[in-house]
Image 1 (cartoon, helix red, strand yellow):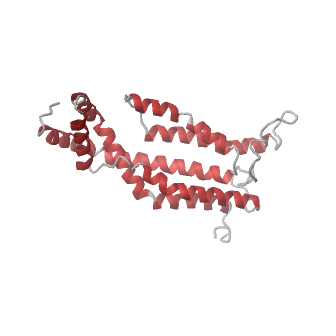
Image 2 (image 1 turned 30 degrees about the vertical axis):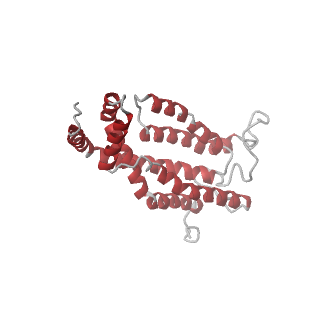
Image 3 (image 1 turned 180 degrees about the vertical axis):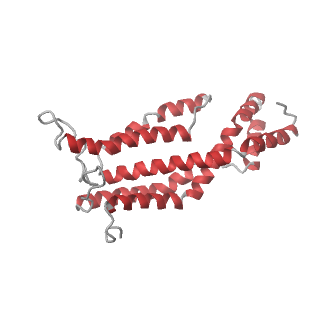
Length: 245
């Protein structure tokens, strides 16, 4: 392994390489998800016109929207696939890291982190390592506490940015409401990261960075090809049923 090769911080780099491998294996599904999402976003203005024009005829409206999805090869459920695939992997990784932390296998530093299994090596400890203060300092001391706080803070920041990239602002009231609820999700992830070994936080941060990079790259690639294709499809497809823009 990496440790046997004499690589410093082998444990942390192993987690990063594992994350890269998982993102690589699931990239085809991620690409389909982003392709479908980008196409749906590009079609939103035209779809709203269809919904307005045929609001009194839901059957025709649904048929036309379904035809748009079919002809553009859009799967509205494609966004669920990467999550469903990665969820068992995440659960297995979570259990593995907790077990390794309990057995002190992760008791090794990684750059600024004193230990990959700290500050919480066993379940149920919560944030007792941080609060209540003892003589004006966290129980593990300010130096270690600040080091362990870096990953949760970076996790929150990367999660916020990742959500903004994946779900850009929308005028749709339903989507606005969803985004208002999801804006608190990074804080929940950050709080949860305070109660697990740093190895898991390192995985989350790496996963967020890679996911954001994939999203930006794929959207730029697909988005540059979309406007003309979408406009051509909608005009030719809907003109046949007497719909004008």
